[in-house]
Length: 256
Image (cartoon, rainbow, N blue to C red; front, top):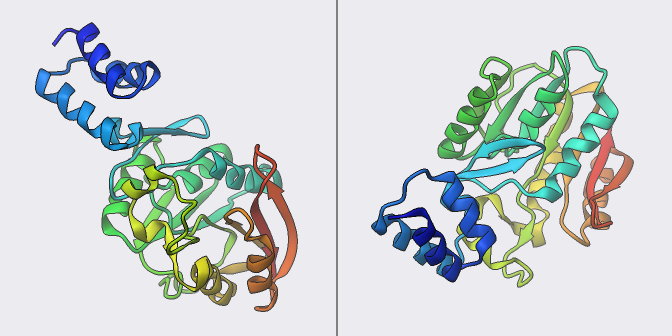
């Protein structure tokens, strides 16, 4: 199919901006492929899930149905870490619930000599993170392993930075946008009104953190007080709260 024909069909199924992203991504599109993509767009499938790419912190990341698409708000998490550790030597980063690996990879890519470990419960997500790390030339710097927040088998190693964008949406929360239904539920929803993952991290992260290390967690809108309480009641010291570009508190930082 001619590219202008594909553009017209995809524009009618969504809008010209999205149609341009898709037609620029694929050099050739058969008639069947165009109609299949148009049907996905009408169903509300996010464009990142169609082109299997989402830019994050200036880096193109591969993404698919097994991973949460990187989101602009999460760049605040990277900014928070870089602001504290950009000049550090041999920084070690632990990423809990790594997904595409975008957070840890962005940190490691921006701090010379940094390296880390990504943990995820999903084997398929770990394969995505491995691809992204290798695409960035960071295969050796970013190790991946399967595990839970409550049982990460890290031996005796301690990290300078523990970072996490955990699942924090309470089940039944009607504020979740339509596109989120195409993301894996395990990466979105948490028990105990969205606090379960924070409780596990707060309880176990002291086993993995260095003496002067810090924990950085992304939070949902309106969760600051509750998440801060979870950590401080487990012995963590509150360091600060960082806001995203929309002025909403997005990241909380803690130390031992």
